[in-house]
Image (tube, rainbow, N blue to C red; front, side):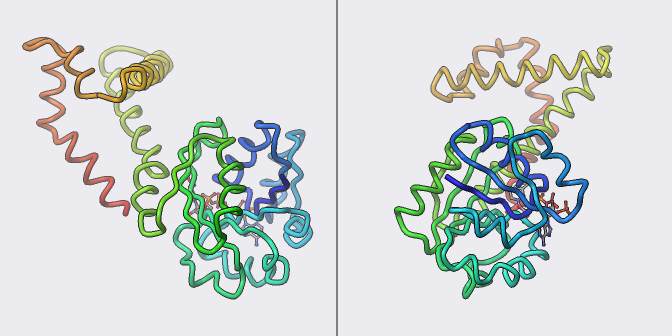
Length: 249
Ligand SMILES: NC(=O)c1ccc[n+]([C@@H]2O[C@H](COP(=O)([O-])OP(=O)(O)OC[C@H]3O[C@@H](n4cnc5c(N)ncnc54)[C@H](OP(=O)(O)O)[C@@H]3O)[C@@H](O)[C@H]2O)c1
């Protein structure tokens, strides 16, 4: 499968590196600046500033530019995109804005763990149809898990996984800050927090995702963990997380 990503910035780059690692996708990436193009040196990914040639080469063209940059790209690629499967990673550009440019349109919203083959990607078929959707899913399956949703559910998915990876990191940053107050160096704290979070993921996954039950196993009544959890709840931890998710809709 030949995939071109127009816009090899943060998320375009994360997907490009994830795809190429899978060994089952050939990848071209475009960007404007030499600085961005140079990060693809010796990666097996072809990087160029020629959007038109890169799009012509591909079976699937992924658009990963910022909302404000999309119109210019669509105008430039108007003649090429009409025969291609077009994937938008720019959720804030509406399907109407693609009308007249991309007859076979799918939205795919991954997160930055794509670079490490651990993305959660939300896929939404706008006008591509089942067979083309299958092709796009097979591409994104190489960089993590895919969840197919109606277009109206995309904002919720983005909040939970694309913004959500940042929210998970927010907990980690807070834990590191606390660990330093408890006397650890920042490096020690980072290692401890990372391993603890990875361990928590493994435990809840192995036990069929029952985090509340797992918390009970850790928190003996009247014990230290319970004291900590109570302090977190008093500080509005759960409510803050839910408010954060809703604020990013
Ligand atoms: N970041 C995320 O976690 C995430 C997750 C899901 C979806 N998204 C969506 O993905 C899109 C990109 O976000 P981002 O964070 O990756 O932004 P970004 O880092 O700014 O990347 C945008 C890239 O597009 C390139 N570009 C701009 N105009 C171009 C043009 N005319 N031709 C070719 N390349 C062009 C830029 O090139 P230069 O670097 O050379 O300027 C840059 O590398 C946004 O619509 C965002 O909403 C982001």
